[in-house]
Image (cartoon, rainbow, N blue to C red; front, top):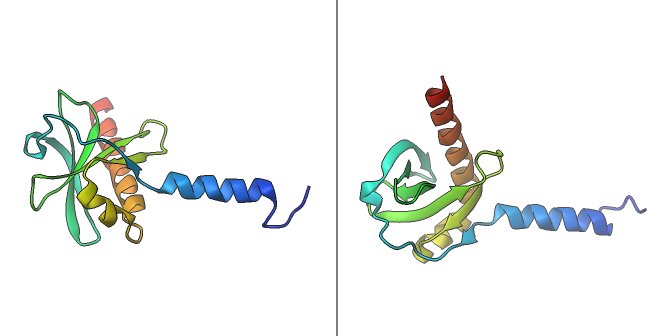
Length: 123
């Protein structure tokens, strides 16, 4: 087995890591109004305030821009296992999530909000 950085197992590992970092495209949700989110937390990512919240009808951790409030970004899954995935529902915000480390920052912020809420609820 080669120890080179170009060895097949290392190339595959780097490729999978890069794929996991990308946001996943998702179809736009029906009947989701970001103004109805129960806000669990917020963070500032790339200079823009982002809200994280849930809806009773769609139990996920949703992310939306605070200004304008109706700008839904998408949602995060995989928070319980500590490896979040970002699903982008709004194609207009997909380019923003791909800039720099915005997707990674969204995932970190979502995980932080999720763990803080679990800590508060479980005591």
